[in-house]
Image (cartoon, rainbow over all chains, first blue to last red; front, side):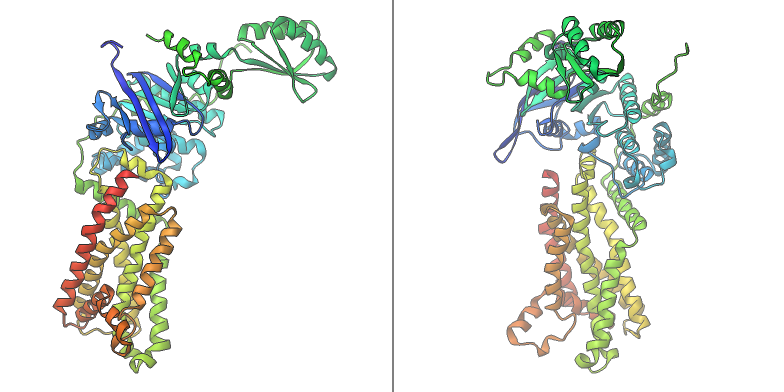
Length: 329
Length: 278
C-alpha cells in the first residue's frame, strides 16, 4: 500500500489467547480509509476478539495494530476518540429510554446538557425513532433497536466504525434501512469495518472482504473475487406440476449444470447458474412448456464459501487464499 | 405498469446524512462531568423502576416492626426503649444492604454489554464506577430516610434531634461508599447478578446479626462478645447511636471512617483493575 491510500486499520500478526484457546492466531488486516471492509466468518471464528483488540477493549497478546495511524495499545485513548462500536460489541442501555441513551452519550462525549438534548433529538428524527424516544429500549423492536445502536455510535461521527452483525435477525425493510445508513456514513467519510455472517451483506456493502476461520484470515479480496473462487450460485425452482420434473431436470442438466432433486416432489435446483444462464434456463423451461410455480437465484452461502475455502484445510495455506491475494494490490 | 418506484424501506437518507455531517466534536469533558453523567444514569434507573427501592426499604422496615414489637419488650423491657436502641443500628443495616445492589447493578451492566460501549469511549476510566456510586448514594439516603421516618412515626424521639439523625445518616452513607467497592469487586468477579446478590447477603446478614445492631452484647458468651465488639458493623452502629443520642462517640466515628477508607483503599483499585480487564 502506498501513501495515496492511507490505512484506517493496519494490523500485523494480531493474536489473542484465552487460557488454552487461541481465539485469534495471527491476523493481518489492511483496511483502506473511506471504504467498507467486511470481515466474514462463522460464530467463534475470532471476528469479535479481533475487533475488541482493534477497538482497545482488550490488549493483544501478540502482534500490533494501528488504527488511523495510532497504536491500539500505546495510544489507546486517541484511538477511542476516533472509533465507535455497535451491536453486540457495545450495546445501549435497555433500562433507559432511547432518548436518555443518546443524551447520556452526548454528555459523556462533552456536549452541554442542552446540546446533548438537541443532538439526541436530531438523531432520533433522522433514524426514525422519534416516536419511540420516550420508551424504554427493552421494549423496542429489533429494527428500531439496531437503528438506535447505530445512532448511539454516531453521536459524534467516528472516523472508523465497527459495525457488528448489523442486520442479524432483521426483516428486509429494516435491513435495507441499516444498509442505507452504512452507505451514508461512508459517503460522509467514515470507514466501516463490517462483521457479518452473510455473504450477501458483505457483497452489498463491502469494497473488500477478509474471511476469518479459526482465528486466521483464510481469504481476502473483493466480493467478486471471493464469489468467483467459490463458484456461482444455484438456481432453485418449484414446478407447478410434479409430473414435469424429469423433463425440467433433463433440460437444466443440458443447459446449465448438475441438477439436484429436492425432497419436495416439485422442487429442484441447479448449481453453476449465474444470472445470465439462469435467465436463459428459465426461458427455455417456459418455451418447453414446463410451468413454474417459483424460481430464485441464490448466492453461495457462507457455508458454501467455507466449504470451498477450507476444503483444502489439510494444507498449510489454502490455495484460494493465494489466488485471491494476487488480486489485491 | 411502467412506473418504477423505490423499494419499501429504502428511506430517504438526506436526514441521516445531515445528522452524520453536523457534528463538530465537542471538547473532551473532565472526570467530574463524566462521573456526574453516570450518576444521572443511576438515578434514571430508579425513576424507571421505582420498585427496586422496595427491596431496600421494605426489608429494614419489616425488621424494625418485627424486632420492636416481637422482641423489644423481652430484650429491652419496653418497645419504646428498644426502638431507641435498635433504630440507629437498623439504619446501618438498611443502608449496608443497599450497597449489595451496587454490585448487582454493575454485574447486570456487564451481562448486557453496555459496559463495552462505555469502555470504548474516550473518558476518564473510573468514571462509570464513580458515577454509579454517586447515583447509589441517592438510594442510600432514601433507604435511610424511610427507616428514620417510620421510626419517628412509631415514637422514636432521639435526643440528638434532626441534626443527630442527619449526622448519623451521613456517617452511614460515608461508610457505604467504602463498603460498596467490596460488592463492586464481587459484581465484577461473579457470573450473574443473582449470584452477586446471594453472596452479598450471605456475607452481610450474619455480620449484621453478629453485631450490636439488635442486642446489647453484654449478655453474650465471651468469644462471641469479643467478635461482636470488633465487628466494624458494631462500631458503626455504636457511632450512629451516639450521634442520634446527641452525644457523639468520637472514637467510634473515627474507627468507622477509617474502616471505610481502608476498604476503599483496597477494593477501589481492585475494582478499576478488574473493570479494565473485563
